Image (cartoon, rainbow, N blue to C red; front, side, top):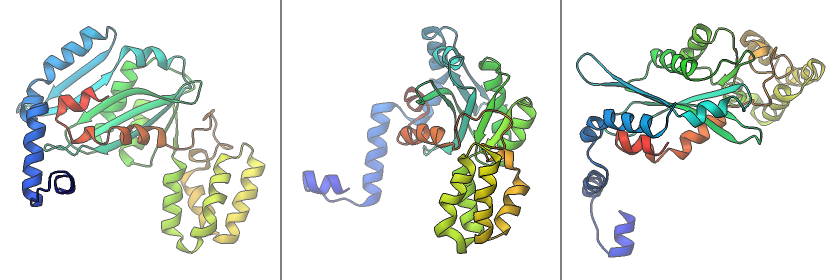
Length: 273
């Protein structure tokens, strides 16, 4: 609306601008319905042009779209040379039919983000994570020392336990910090750096030092963290190498890059991956 006013001196209502945008996107990218109709052929082209890739989709009994997943051959081969850490996150699609975009990534030797898989699910429930992790297990080479980092979504926790039972599961420390600030509001100013240092230090002795600092802020913080399990958030207590991946922001960064694409029809969203 503002662009039309400043560039062309044309004034229009919000509704008219929204309708015009929808028509323009449909002319440029096909309609939402047409995009779903072209999904099978797109999956076929992706597999043929990327040998060794795993690309699949499924429909419900009534013929409606159910899910889509993609793990390209370059990602599958590159996984062997990356750290054995999978970072996962989910975000909502903004198109007409909605849905959930699931992202899995890792870090390469230069500590750069390396994508592993993308999935799109028609709804948002605990089953989507079980499906997505099963797809990951089928697509990626087994790693004995696997570590998975995510937020504390119940669906993720239960799915990691059932699908990747050999992996250790740790939580994003920034999500935990946000919970601490909400639960213990009087400590917001000083608890941030103390908790982040507690999570990052490499020895149990140093971890205990920072925990004692937080005890002086509010002794309930220690109880809250102990109930969660020190191995879920502390690098010092982790029984497996976490490679300093303390947050899920890598996966969140991929979702942020795809923020505009989440408004597109299905096939155009996939092309942005």
